[in-house]
Image (cartoon, rainbow, N blue to C red):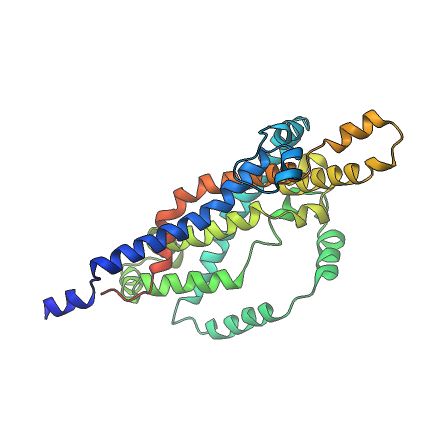
Length: 304
């Protein structure tokens, strides 16, 4: 029986080599666009004009990064504010959603079905951009405030359903019953039992929240005009828009020297440099979440 089981769950050397080659090609195809973005950000405008996008340009330059560095402390302040937004929103959001998921995971909670249906109904319909803008600005007064990045995206029922599934799949009901027999209340069960056994689920949703908060440029563009509160991606988007506007209107100038300088301003390389600046922190942060992220993806799977 054991030999038959091992034979069914093993692959031949030929298939092993074929799968290894396939996975290697897939990895190269995933990494190649990232490498190309970095190379383009280090390419000159003339090489991009004559050669197009290539992995080895005829002229290397850091003019795009030097141009972005001329913004002074804006990028540093953008990083500081974006990290603050991301950390505060992610921590508070995980705390609120995990507590809500814990409540939904209690089978003896009578209102569980009604709350679930009500929350699910809110996923199907949305008030739209204008009502949410009126609510956040006129009634909640969150225009040009730190909290506009925190409270509107604090709750997601979709993530709550995922977290509830994590709880029901990884924590047996007998553990809850034993804790209640020993006199533990819900808060003690949540903090001392659920959270320690819940790291994979929190890390998975936390990674999604970190990426979403880090890439949230639209909120800042809609609600923030104060430079000190500007999100990094919003600030970089405005810089790119300014570069494109200046370069597109360079032909209307009369001074040939100024026109030549403006024509040499990086456009494509600056856009890729902005991409590198934006994506790099997430790429460095992902390895720290990888262990729990893989565990989160495999929870509920059938083991052989």
